[in-house]
Image 1 (cartoon, rainbow, N blue to C red):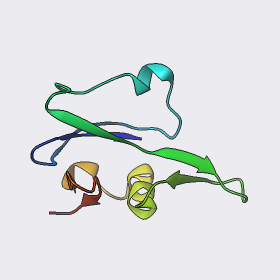
Image 2: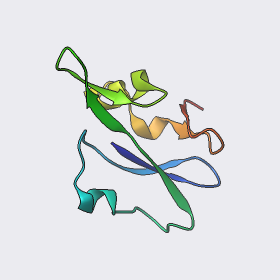
Image 3: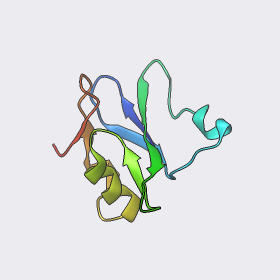
Length: 86
């Protein structure tokens, strides 16, 4: 999953869903790179053969992946790059 957000406000402006991304997707950008930044969440396979988000907030990214949380309701703390509900 790749989440794009406004560098000044932390507002989510777009996302690319998925657990594994192609080189092309990793080179994509939404908006003006001078105004937006992104968080790239990699997924890793656990010993139980299940995939897990490799990040500091795995529970939030699991909810995004399952569709139980709406990504656009969240913002990004521009200093810590952590997701939060405003």
